[in-house]
Image 1 (tube, rainbow, N blue to C red):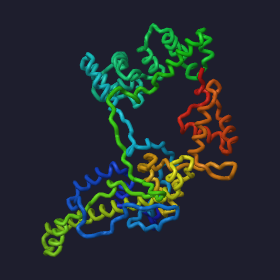
Image 2: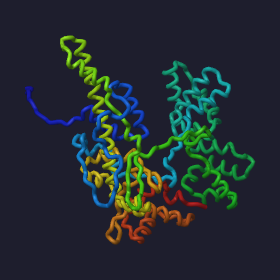
Image 3: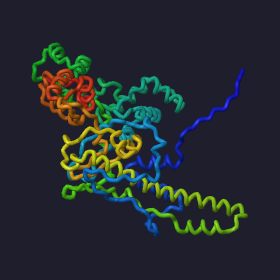
Image 4: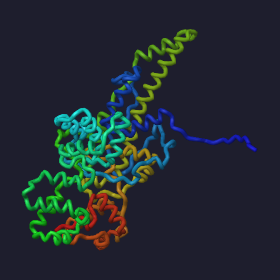
Length: 482
């Protein structure tokens, strides 16, 4: 027998305005302009320019000493609505600093690989069906430059999407043509095929190239395991010739999609904060683009006052009043959200500077203290997810270079003296040990653990392996050289 019941529950939900604020907080300075332009386009009650009446503006510059500053309560507090599990990268790993005299650090990004390949496709003679196949194959190439989808599945894709029947032989005929495109090794189906495609473009009369080709054809698995002694013994190759052949192979590109000869374009990452050291006194300011001048449209305000004082009997007039009020409220909220964004950014950066004060004074990486998101969240009374959103996409310009904020977050490692040091310092020591090792007998993770323990860092083997992987350093077997 079914029973009807009534349950009462309390749920927290984000309002559309709170969701918008979260998005505003997360975007970097470079994207803020386009977001403001978008709002200006959709809301005629919002205008660029200074407000005619004086209003409380957020501080644009603050000085930082080691003593904590008085904190102000947020005008718009969404932390109560955010949960700790809404975090990406709780313990964040940062990138290295930029050039000392650069005001902006840059990231090189390539022209679309697909566009480059389609352009090359247009220079070879193909009939209509082959051109269709070529476009489908190029569309199946992943970002590393490989085609990992089976030929029969690609044939099925063409059959369903283009209503054209093709055979695997027809696919491979066009595939072999594409594999002659630049960059070398493109459109390979396996790593072995990728390396062979590249080495085929080398001088085929060279003994070292010939031996390298045979190794890739016949001993590829042994080569990937670095069983060099076995391979050399099999071919009875002299040391010099064998070493030259191995060097040829190791210099081939395993990810041809990662580099093309196409024109590179540069994306400039604009710092959100600027920090000056004024005779030992740290002065922080927001990038000017974080403080746009926005105001409420006077014409819209006057329009609303006129409508509001008039008779409300007319239905169309009521709709007009409702529309104007909605736009005015949205404009006021957006301006407040921008101001709140500025205050939140300054509070978080203020706390980070105080926590890492020694580093910002000296610029020495070894002065970085272990710091996680919770450390900052607890000090300024914000939710961890708010700190994560601020730190994940922002950067600060200092006299030592431009740094992403996540650079200052790291775990702590205990030493024999009982102090905690930043995991960044441990990684640097680990990197130095590996660089100084005998490459003919590289150190295994257990040996690296012993060496770090001997230097006073209490660290487990699995942690050594984790840090080694984060430094993109392969295991000992793959670091071995002949």
